[in-house]
Structure formats: C-alpha cells, structure tokens
Image 1: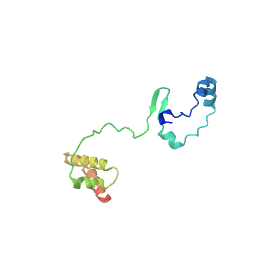
Image 2 (image 1 turned 90 degrees about the vertical axis):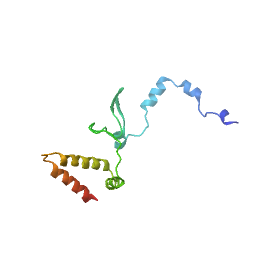
Image 3 (image 1 turned 60 degrees about the vertical axis):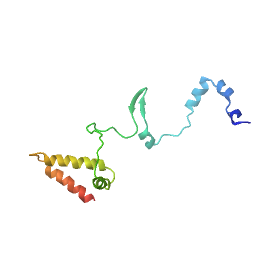
Image 4 (image 1 turned 90 degrees about the horizontal axis):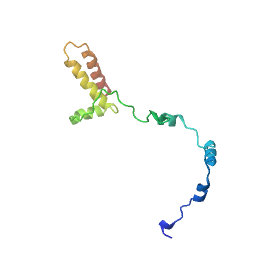
Length: 122
C-alpha cells in the first residue's frame, strides 16, 4: 500500500458519536498538570477577548530612538568587552560628553565619575 492509501489511525465514527455532554465531562475531568510559577510568569494573559499582558521583553521607555551608527573597531571592542549592556554604556558615555560640553552645568563631575567607573571595569 502506498503512503497516500495508509489508514489514518483515527476512529472518525467515535468522534462523530461524541456528544456535547461527553465533551463537557472530559473538560471537568481535566488531567493536565498544574502550571508552575515559571510558566505563569511567561504566560500571555487575556481577560475574555481583552489582552492584559504579553510575554517577552518589556517595551522601552519610549525616549530612545533606534539608529545606525558607524564606530571605530577599537571603540566598539572596548564597549563590547564589558559584556551585556554595552549599548547602554555607549549611550551613557555620549550623554556624559554632552554634559561636559554644556556650559555652566553642575553635572560634569558625575559624567567624569561614570567614565572612570567604566575604565575600572576593564
């Protein structure tokens, strides 16, 4: 017998004979395991048809903008060597530079402290 002529292995007569009461009884006799805390934390939550919470990375603050930027290899290697969060450190370094350039700003010391902390990590 060819693959297209093989039996499905299901009992369609039994499926057709299943009543709504049978289905309801099986729903009450739920034998599925309880959800773990990890599964619940990752679940997409709906209240009826209304979406409540999505799994995955949270949305950003909305104050940042995605850009394409060309950096020298040495600059990129320096920040990536610090591990995860390197893009945030690039942003902090650029923000610190702006503060240093701002006349009369009270924050240059903080910007320099951030730069010194980044150097100590390496």
